[in-house]
Image 1 (cartoon, rainbow, N blue to C red):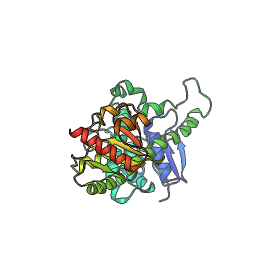
Image 2 (cartoon, rainbow, N blue to C red):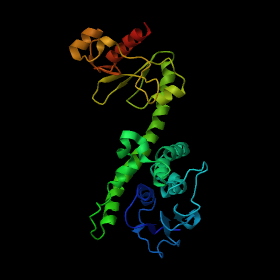
Image 3 (tube, one colour):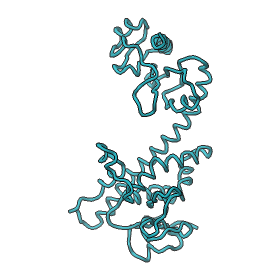
Length: 307
Protein backbone atom coordinates (compact mmCIF):
# COMPACT_ATOMS: atom_id res chain seq x y z
CA UNK A 1 0.00 0.00 0.00
CA UNK A 2 1.27 3.45 -0.92
CA UNK A 3 1.42 5.86 2.03
CA UNK A 4 0.06 9.21 0.94
CA UNK A 5 -0.53 10.97 4.29
CA UNK A 6 1.24 11.11 7.66
CA UNK A 7 -1.26 12.33 10.23
CA UNK A 8 -0.55 13.68 13.70
CA UNK A 9 -2.32 16.14 15.96
CA UNK A 10 -2.38 19.90 15.50
CA UNK A 11 -1.57 22.51 18.14
CA UNK A 12 1.44 22.42 20.41
CA UNK A 13 3.92 19.61 19.86
CA UNK A 14 6.11 17.35 21.94
CA UNK A 15 9.25 15.40 21.20
CA UNK A 16 7.45 12.11 20.57
CA UNK A 17 5.42 13.04 17.50
CA UNK A 18 8.19 15.32 16.23
CA UNK A 19 10.71 12.46 16.37
CA UNK A 20 8.13 10.05 14.93
CA UNK A 21 7.83 12.45 12.01
CA UNK A 22 11.59 12.27 11.48
CA UNK A 23 11.31 8.51 10.96
CA UNK A 24 8.22 8.57 8.81
CA UNK A 25 9.15 11.46 6.52
CA UNK A 26 12.43 9.69 5.72
CA UNK A 27 10.61 6.47 4.83
CA UNK A 28 7.69 8.10 3.02
CA UNK A 29 9.14 11.31 1.53
CA UNK A 30 6.29 11.76 -0.93
CA UNK A 31 3.58 11.57 1.74
CA UNK A 32 1.94 14.77 2.93
CA UNK A 33 2.31 15.55 6.64
CA UNK A 34 -1.05 16.60 8.09
CA UNK A 35 -1.45 18.13 11.57
CA UNK A 36 -5.11 17.98 12.59
CA UNK A 37 -7.63 16.69 15.12
CA UNK A 38 -10.35 16.23 12.51
CA UNK A 39 -11.88 12.81 13.11
CA UNK A 40 -12.07 12.08 9.39
CA UNK A 41 -8.29 12.33 9.23
CA UNK A 42 -7.51 10.58 12.53
CA UNK A 43 -9.57 7.52 11.65
CA UNK A 44 -7.57 4.71 10.01
CA UNK A 45 -7.89 4.44 6.26
CA UNK A 46 -6.03 3.58 3.10
CA UNK A 47 -2.77 5.43 2.57
CA UNK A 48 -2.58 6.91 6.09
CA UNK A 49 -0.24 6.50 9.04
CA UNK A 50 -1.72 8.14 12.11
CA UNK A 51 0.38 8.76 15.21
CA UNK A 52 0.05 10.41 18.62
CA UNK A 53 -3.63 10.94 17.99
CA UNK A 54 -6.71 8.78 17.41
CA UNK A 55 -6.78 6.98 20.79
CA UNK A 56 -5.91 3.57 19.34
CA UNK A 57 -2.91 1.43 18.58
CA UNK A 58 -3.16 -0.98 15.70
CA UNK A 59 -0.02 -1.34 13.62
CA UNK A 60 -1.80 -3.23 10.83
CA UNK A 61 -4.37 -0.44 10.57
CA UNK A 62 -1.64 2.20 10.62
CA UNK A 63 -2.57 3.97 13.87
CA UNK A 64 -0.01 4.55 16.64
CA UNK A 65 -1.46 6.43 19.61
CA UNK A 66 -0.68 5.85 23.28
CA UNK A 67 -3.15 8.10 25.13
CA UNK A 68 -5.94 5.52 25.40
CA UNK A 69 -6.58 3.03 28.18
CA UNK A 70 -5.16 0.48 28.33
CA UNK A 71 -2.08 2.14 26.96
CA UNK A 72 0.48 0.14 24.97
CA UNK A 73 3.38 -1.17 27.06
CA UNK A 74 6.76 -2.68 26.33
CA UNK A 75 7.44 -6.26 27.34
CA UNK A 76 9.02 -4.98 30.56
CA UNK A 77 5.91 -2.93 31.39
CA UNK A 78 7.34 0.49 30.53
CA UNK A 79 5.01 2.74 28.53
CA UNK A 80 5.36 3.59 24.87
CA UNK A 81 4.90 7.02 23.41
CA UNK A 82 4.12 7.38 19.74
CA UNK A 83 7.86 7.55 19.07
CA UNK A 84 8.44 4.15 20.66
CA UNK A 85 5.56 2.63 18.71
CA UNK A 86 6.78 4.08 15.42
CA UNK A 87 10.34 2.97 16.13
CA UNK A 88 9.24 -0.58 16.97
CA UNK A 89 7.32 -0.79 13.68
CA UNK A 90 9.54 1.16 11.30
CA UNK A 91 12.93 1.48 12.99
CA UNK A 92 14.65 -1.30 11.09
CA UNK A 93 13.39 0.08 7.79
CA UNK A 94 14.73 3.47 8.82
CA UNK A 95 18.14 2.02 9.61
CA UNK A 96 18.20 0.32 6.21
CA UNK A 97 17.33 3.66 4.61
CA UNK A 98 20.41 5.07 6.38
CA UNK A 99 22.55 2.27 4.89
CA UNK A 100 23.21 0.54 8.20
CA UNK A 101 24.68 -2.90 7.39
CA UNK A 102 22.23 -5.74 7.92
CA UNK A 103 24.69 -7.43 10.29
CA UNK A 104 24.48 -4.43 12.64
CA UNK A 105 20.75 -3.79 12.26
CA UNK A 106 19.36 -5.52 15.33
CA UNK A 107 22.15 -4.31 17.59
CA UNK A 108 21.76 -0.65 16.58
CA UNK A 109 17.97 -0.88 16.61
CA UNK A 110 18.03 -2.08 20.20
CA UNK A 111 20.75 0.31 21.30
CA UNK A 112 18.94 3.34 19.84
CA UNK A 113 15.68 2.15 21.37
CA UNK A 114 17.08 1.84 24.89
CA UNK A 115 19.31 4.89 24.85
CA UNK A 116 17.32 7.38 22.77
CA UNK A 117 13.72 6.28 22.24
CA UNK A 118 12.91 4.93 25.71
CA UNK A 119 13.82 8.14 27.58
CA UNK A 120 11.52 10.10 25.25
CA UNK A 121 8.76 7.55 25.88
CA UNK A 122 9.17 7.76 29.64
CA UNK A 123 9.26 11.56 29.79
CA UNK A 124 6.26 11.90 27.49
CA UNK A 125 4.24 9.55 29.68
CA UNK A 126 5.29 11.20 32.94
CA UNK A 127 7.09 8.01 33.96
CA UNK A 128 10.36 9.91 34.30
CA UNK A 129 10.89 13.53 35.25
CA UNK A 130 13.45 15.51 33.24
CA UNK A 131 14.71 16.82 36.60
CA UNK A 132 16.33 13.39 37.08
CA UNK A 133 19.04 14.74 34.81
CA UNK A 134 20.00 17.10 37.65
CA UNK A 135 21.70 20.33 36.63
CA UNK A 136 21.49 19.25 32.98
CA UNK A 137 17.69 18.83 33.06
CA UNK A 138 17.16 21.82 30.81
CA UNK A 139 19.47 20.32 28.20
CA UNK A 140 17.70 16.99 27.70
CA UNK A 141 16.57 16.49 24.11
CA UNK A 142 12.80 16.47 24.80
CA UNK A 143 13.11 19.76 26.69
CA UNK A 144 15.28 21.36 24.03
CA UNK A 145 12.93 20.32 21.22
CA UNK A 146 9.97 21.80 23.06
CA UNK A 147 11.75 25.15 23.34
CA UNK A 148 11.19 25.36 19.57
CA UNK A 149 7.44 25.75 20.07
CA UNK A 150 5.94 29.23 19.58
CA UNK A 151 5.83 31.50 22.60
CA UNK A 152 2.52 31.61 24.48
CA UNK A 153 1.52 34.97 22.98
CA UNK A 154 2.46 34.07 19.40
CA UNK A 155 -1.01 33.04 18.27
CA UNK A 156 -0.69 33.95 14.63
CA UNK A 157 -2.39 31.73 12.10
CA UNK A 158 -0.30 28.63 11.47
CA UNK A 159 2.27 29.46 14.17
CA UNK A 160 2.24 25.94 15.64
CA UNK A 161 2.48 24.26 12.25
CA UNK A 162 5.30 26.56 11.13
CA UNK A 163 7.22 25.91 14.34
CA UNK A 164 6.72 22.15 13.98
CA UNK A 165 8.07 22.14 10.45
CA UNK A 166 11.01 24.32 11.49
CA UNK A 167 11.78 21.97 14.40
CA UNK A 168 11.65 18.86 12.19
CA UNK A 169 15.14 19.23 10.61
CA UNK A 170 16.59 20.00 14.06
CA UNK A 171 15.13 16.78 15.45
CA UNK A 172 16.27 14.91 12.34
CA UNK A 173 19.85 16.07 12.87
CA UNK A 174 19.91 14.56 16.38
CA UNK A 175 18.38 11.25 15.29
CA UNK A 176 20.67 10.81 12.31
CA UNK A 177 23.78 11.87 14.22
CA UNK A 178 23.02 9.35 16.95
CA UNK A 179 22.49 6.50 14.52
CA UNK A 180 25.50 7.39 12.39
CA UNK A 181 27.56 7.48 15.57
CA UNK A 182 26.38 4.04 16.60
CA UNK A 183 27.08 2.64 13.15
CA UNK A 184 30.55 4.20 13.20
CA UNK A 185 31.30 2.60 16.57
CA UNK A 186 30.50 -0.82 15.10
CA UNK A 187 32.87 -0.16 12.19
CA UNK A 188 35.55 1.04 14.59
CA UNK A 189 35.08 -2.00 16.80
CA UNK A 190 36.05 -4.31 13.94
CA UNK A 191 39.11 -2.21 13.05
CA UNK A 192 40.30 -1.96 16.66
CA UNK A 193 39.86 -5.70 17.15
CA UNK A 194 42.19 -6.34 14.20
CA UNK A 195 44.71 -3.87 15.61
CA UNK A 196 44.64 -5.58 19.01
CA UNK A 197 45.58 -8.87 17.35
CA UNK A 198 48.43 -7.11 15.55
CA UNK A 199 49.66 -5.55 18.81
CA UNK A 200 50.08 -8.96 20.41
CA UNK A 201 51.32 -8.70 23.99
CA UNK A 202 52.60 -5.14 23.56
CA UNK A 203 51.25 -2.34 25.74
CA UNK A 204 50.73 0.09 22.85
CA UNK A 205 47.89 -0.16 20.35
CA UNK A 206 48.44 1.46 16.96
CA UNK A 207 45.36 2.48 15.00
CA UNK A 208 45.13 3.77 11.42
CA UNK A 209 43.19 6.87 12.51
CA UNK A 210 41.43 8.34 15.50
CA UNK A 211 38.35 6.28 16.39
CA UNK A 212 36.40 4.95 19.40
CA UNK A 213 38.52 2.13 20.81
CA UNK A 214 37.74 1.45 24.46
CA UNK A 215 34.76 -0.90 23.89
CA UNK A 216 36.77 -3.17 21.62
CA UNK A 217 39.71 -3.18 24.05
CA UNK A 218 37.40 -4.21 26.89
CA UNK A 219 35.58 -6.81 24.78
CA UNK A 220 38.91 -8.33 23.74
CA UNK A 221 40.05 -8.54 27.36
CA UNK A 222 43.19 -6.64 26.35
CA UNK A 223 44.07 -5.52 29.86
CA UNK A 224 47.76 -5.30 28.93
CA UNK A 225 47.18 -2.29 26.67
CA UNK A 226 48.05 1.05 28.25
CA UNK A 227 48.34 3.59 25.42
CA UNK A 228 47.05 4.16 21.89
CA UNK A 229 48.81 5.93 19.02
CA UNK A 230 47.28 7.05 15.74
CA UNK A 231 47.82 9.62 12.97
CA UNK A 232 45.81 12.84 13.04
CA UNK A 233 44.32 14.81 10.16
CA UNK A 234 47.04 17.47 10.28
CA UNK A 235 49.76 14.90 9.66
CA UNK A 236 51.05 14.61 13.21
CA UNK A 237 50.37 11.74 15.65
CA UNK A 238 48.49 11.38 18.92
CA UNK A 239 49.47 9.36 21.98
CA UNK A 240 46.42 8.78 24.18
CA UNK A 241 45.60 6.95 27.38
CA UNK A 242 42.91 4.28 27.92
CA UNK A 243 40.29 4.97 30.54
CA UNK A 244 39.62 2.35 33.21
CA UNK A 245 35.84 2.85 33.01
CA UNK A 246 33.58 4.30 30.34
CA UNK A 247 32.22 7.08 32.55
CA UNK A 248 35.47 7.78 34.38
CA UNK A 249 38.44 10.02 33.72
CA UNK A 250 40.79 7.63 35.54
CA UNK A 251 43.25 6.04 33.13
CA UNK A 252 44.98 2.68 33.14
CA UNK A 253 48.19 4.69 33.06
CA UNK A 254 48.90 8.42 32.73
CA UNK A 255 51.53 9.99 30.55
CA UNK A 256 54.69 10.94 32.50
CA UNK A 257 54.22 13.73 35.03
CA UNK A 258 57.34 15.51 33.80
CA UNK A 259 55.66 16.07 30.41
CA UNK A 260 52.49 17.74 31.72
CA UNK A 261 51.68 21.04 30.01
CA UNK A 262 54.88 21.19 27.97
CA UNK A 263 55.19 21.98 24.26
CA UNK A 264 57.79 21.83 21.52
CA UNK A 265 61.41 22.36 22.68
CA UNK A 266 60.49 22.12 26.36
CA UNK A 267 58.73 18.78 25.80
CA UNK A 268 61.56 17.51 23.60
CA UNK A 269 63.99 18.32 26.39
CA UNK A 270 61.85 16.72 29.11
CA UNK A 271 61.11 13.57 27.13
CA UNK A 272 64.27 13.23 25.12
CA UNK A 273 62.15 12.66 22.00
CA UNK A 274 62.82 14.75 18.89
CA UNK A 275 59.42 15.64 17.44
CA UNK A 276 57.52 15.70 20.74
CA UNK A 277 55.09 18.62 20.32
CA UNK A 278 52.56 18.78 23.16
CA UNK A 279 51.37 17.05 26.32
CA UNK A 280 48.09 18.01 27.98
CA UNK A 281 48.17 19.09 31.59
CA UNK A 282 45.78 16.24 32.33
CA UNK A 283 48.37 13.78 30.92
CA UNK A 284 45.79 11.91 28.84
CA UNK A 285 46.98 12.99 25.40
CA UNK A 286 50.22 13.99 23.78
CA UNK A 287 51.07 14.95 20.20
CA UNK A 288 54.15 14.04 18.19
CA UNK A 289 55.31 15.29 14.80
CA UNK A 290 55.93 11.81 13.37
CA UNK A 291 55.00 8.19 13.89
CA UNK A 292 58.52 7.46 15.07
CA UNK A 293 58.26 10.15 17.74
CA UNK A 294 54.84 8.88 18.83
CA UNK A 295 56.14 5.31 19.12
CA UNK A 296 59.05 6.48 21.25
CA UNK A 297 56.84 8.64 23.49
CA UNK A 298 54.49 5.71 24.00
CA UNK A 299 57.43 3.42 24.81
CA UNK A 300 58.73 5.85 27.41
CA UNK A 301 55.25 6.27 28.87
CA UNK A 302 54.94 2.50 29.25
CA UNK A 303 58.33 2.34 30.96
CA UNK A 304 57.34 5.11 33.37
CA UNK A 305 53.98 3.50 34.12
CA UNK A 306 55.55 0.11 34.80
CA UNK A 307 58.50 1.40 36.83
